[in-house]
Image 1 (cartoon, rainbow, N blue to C red):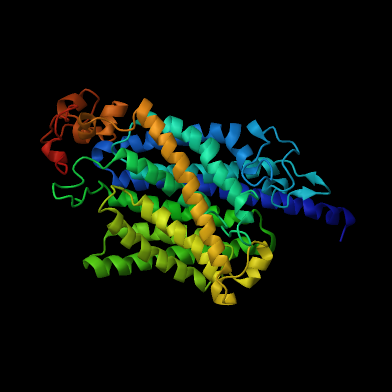
Image 2: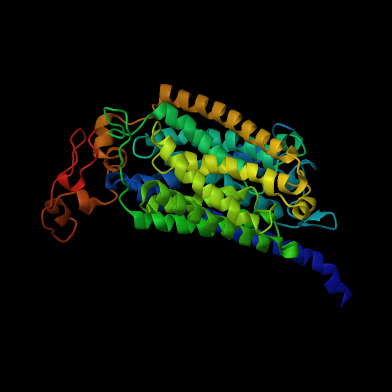
Length: 476
């Protein structure tokens, strides 16, 4: 072979790795659409527009905070607790040799970093931060003030998530626990972090009006569109291929393809587990539960995705699906979590992290050089205990920081809209227009905008008034 071609091969390989990471980045970005549709589907018609404003606002705020501070704390150095270089991405070669970004997924050739490798790593990791932040808000639907998003998004993207990302992905605390905590793509770092912050918000926010009867029993508040919810689940499933397989940070050895197969098997197992559990418990195949089973299976397989063989993936997914359904039904008795965040991302995230301690394969552990093989291979609970340590550290740190942040927001800006605004719906109360205006605005007014007349047009509920009969709600 031509010596010049041989000389360029490492560079071409590095550029191919970068290309894959950018493709994966786009897939993970598309998960924002998945979260939007999932949450809108689970919302009532008077609250659907706010879901779009929330996604766009939080993503944009987080992008600036991650650039200015978050990435530096997550990957700017190899200290145990947090990074300390790379603020505003002025990194050059200053990122510590102990940090993951010091070797941007093999994109260093002849001692020189390939152009764009750090930028690709930066934007890929930001998408994980944005996913974790999106998870937080699913538990707060239909009663949180929009203004509360802003300060929490800044703190979360600049400090809370980067701190845990540094521990799990940046050579920090997780590497010091036992033989090293295994979390390939973030069952704990991303999903449990988002769910734990959501728990802090929920405790301070309280349930939606009408969620619990006088006897304290929960009432169903159905979302307005299961098709939109289902579309959201499928988009998230697609995005997860970039989320997990992209975490290989390259195409060398084609391990990313194995991770993709494992991811799909885990998701499928989650659906099957949820179908079994909800059918046994209620004799009905609840669509929302089945969709959340897919999410639970995906969350559960996220940590083990690079550590387990194909046979283990559907088992992990099925258990994740079982956990999600049981968790949603149990949590609903005390906490109003409209989309099942605490179960699908929290409990399934815990299970996925612990599953590494059971199923991690010696072959893959040796390749990734983190921790040791799981209990079913070694007979030792050592890695399982290490994984539990990672879970505990995540919950304690994230809950403490999030609760303090939300408590300050509640005491200053306020967390919750008032009762009249909640009754009217956040679309009109917070954003000045309904997401579905033809459903709420009377025909006479719509005609002024060129809308076709409809039969039975009724006036929208004013702030402080109950909804119209067309949009009857669970009584407050």
